[in-house]
Length: 437
Image (cartoon, rainbow, N blue to C red):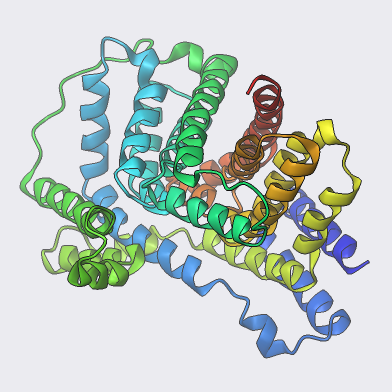
């Protein structure tokens, strides 16, 4: 009963936010308060502790740093340079953005880091090239996720560990090679992403005019402040990437392991934001004013209600239901769809995969379905809803919008267009994969 009420409350909060234009996060906090404290018996302090401090901190810190680049024109100059580089083939811009995101993720950048770096640049490129912003958002989101599935990338390492753990609980079953499984998952994720990007590239009417009547003029040279900002952006990416990558290449080095464990994108962004302010690269008042407070409050409020859902056992209820009620031939689609729904409400690596992966070895043995396929269906399904504005990636894309009207429009399109299309395409793709492989 509690789970049904919480799911209904989440849906109602989204509906009320859409109809009243009041921040959805406010409704989520109200529902979390009444359901959590007055029905579930949580103490007010326990409910307040559900406020997603880490997510809020990262969004603020990353926004502050990249607002420097936005305020002094560096991001605009970068976007114009990329546009000029693609001047002969503007229609391939979505695929170029996807490729950049994949490369950064494979190199070791976390999903959040890739989106934080590319989202502001991508939205500016969309404006300059007349490309639909939804297409740009889908391209970089898919690229960051697909690249992260590589066996040695940030997400791939976590998935491999969870796969190995799921077989430790069932020692009587034949263990699969988690590295090879992740490698296959990476390949399928890239294929799925290219299909999805292609759908958005050619299905959205606005994309018919990519590059049309656009003068791809060679951008002016960077100013001194813009050059310094660009150097700081590269340096920040290097700091965030190098040590985690070295940790993978040299796992036995204690110093590298220690330093890598201390690297956090939010804290690093704050360090570089302070350096930029000391160098007077942008006015402090302006970069603070550009922080997307409305989006932050929405994400934080939704996070509280989602945490109440986890506390009520809603997530566990969804995962346990699959094992006992779903016909064999529908299991791959069920894992895909349930993974998508759970990921909409919670973390893929923190909740969805730890909840669903342990079910896979036993289901694979009893149903004859390939474990590799089921692991892939789970991950791709969960990642298909990551474009949602309630996710960390979707929130960063929203936070990169230039004004409130544009942000509100993109919020609705991410929620009601991109998310359902992505989930639906993932379900069909996973069904085909389960039948062919």
